[in-house]
Image (cartoon, rainbow, N blue to C red; front, side, top):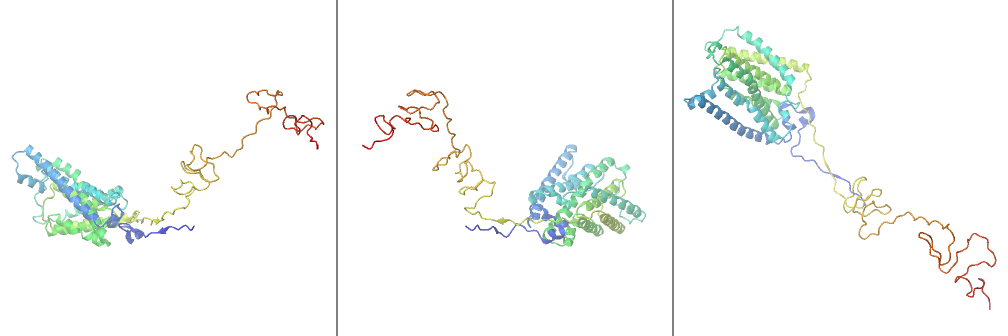
Length: 448
C-alpha cells in the first residue's frame, strides 16, 4: 500500500509580520508587532480602556481631595476646589500634589490597558530591549542636567523681557516652601515619565502600527502634546520643538529613556525655579528669549545624546522572527506507528515492541506477563519443553507393590523389564500376555 506523504498547508496567521520588522528590524514605533496580540484594532481598544480607567481614577483622586479639603475647611466652596485643582500654586503643596499625581497615574493605567489588550511583553512599550534601560536613562539624565545648568546660567546673563516674570513667590514668603519642594522632587519625575509613555510611547506605536515611515509617528502626536499645554504661541512653539526632539530621540535610540530624561530635567527646572521664586510655573506667556534658550537647550541635548549613542552599542531595532509554517499530515489508517510509541487503536503494533495491555500480541512474540488472553485467541503456550523425569534408581519393586509417593509405578501383572542394553540369552524372554504363545511357551509360534 502506498503511504501518502504529508501535504504542506499555506500558513495564514491572524496578522502576518511586515517585511521591515523581520528584515532590518522593528524600530520603536513598530514595536507593537512584537506583542502577543498586534491586530490593527488593538491601539483603539487600548486607548478606549485607558480613557475609561483614567476618568475613574482621576475622579476618585478629586473626590478624596475635595473631602479632605472640606474636612479641613468646611467653608470652602466648589470654586475654591476647582481653582486649586487647575492652577499650579507652589504655596499650596496639597493642590500641587493632586495635579502632579493626576498626571502621573497615566503611566500605570497605560501599562495595564496595554497588557489587557496586547498581552504579554509589556516591556516593549519602553524600548527595543523589552525593558526600561536604567543605565542609559541615568546617563541621559546626567547629560540633560549638565546642558540645562550651562544654558540656564548663560540665559540669566541676558536681560529679561518686561512682563515675563509672572507672579513670583520667594522662599521667605512661602510658608510651604519645604513641602512644595518635596512634592516637586518626588512627583515630577513620575509626571514627566507618564507623559512620555503616553505621547511618545502609546501615540508613536499607535501610528507606527498603521504607518511604516517614522516621520508620521514623530510628527502626528505633536499637535496633541501642544494642545495639552496652555501657553501663548511662543510657548506653544517651544512645546512643539520639545515634542519633535523627544519623538526623534525615541526613534533614534530605540526607547523612551532619552525623552524621559529630557522631560524630567525640564520639568524639575521649571517647577524648581518656581518654588525658589525665580519663575512662575503657572504663567502662560513666554518671551522670545525663553524660546531661544529652550531651543538651544534641546538642540544641545540632542547633540550630546547622539554623541553618547554612537559611542555605545547603538541598538535601536528589534528583529522579529516569523513563526514556522506548520505542515498538515492527515493520519493514514493501517500505517504502523513509530517504534517506541503505543499503537493507535485499530492498528497492529510494530513487530519487536511489547504489546500494550489489552491488545492481542503479535505473531511470534511472547505476550506481556500479566496480560489476560484476548477473547477469541488461544492462550499463549510456553515454548520451553518440560524436563524429562529422572530414571528410577531405587530398590527393585515387587509385582503388584504399590509404588511409593513420587516413584514410577510398574505395569500391573508384569515383571520388571530387563535392561535392553544387556546381552540376549537363550531361554530368556518376556512373560505375560505380551508373549507370542498363550500357553507359556517360547515366543516362537509353531507352524502346525
